[in-house]
Length: 217
Image (cartoon, rainbow, N blue to C red; front, side, top):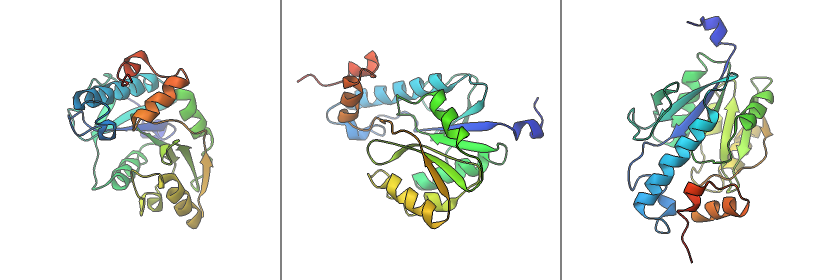
């Protein structure tokens, strides 16, 4: 068993994912995709992200979900914890607060960015050199696919219009107002709508199982 001192020298990646419930996940893809297709896509994207990030030696991987039985497969080596809070900001702040009790630096990613890689996350950690620095991975829709920090900054999670194209902009404004330096990674696509799937397909970055769901016109 590792000592607390050893654990404090490590980084943690927190994957946020909703439990797989029909009509509760990937709802913005309906009606272009059926409810069952939306459920399937959610399960597969989550599995895809977990598999790509698991087994890394330079960070620990923890899944935060809305149910201890999330109804999708989770690799045995990944710890599963429950999200807590009334909105996304509260839930992310709670997760970061909990994990920074043990780890030096924490990164949160979603479960719907098919382009997410261990190298992208390693780049994020390399840019966090002080507690007054954070890292953001912009999403092409105006949100973000990654946020990382070594100290909890509650201002980053407050007064944000979650689920809109203003999330990144508002987060950056909050950081600037609190004198926090924000480092930006290259933007990535997260899958929220059919257009996101089409963007990945045009770039030859869409897995076959996801491409098969696209409507044929």
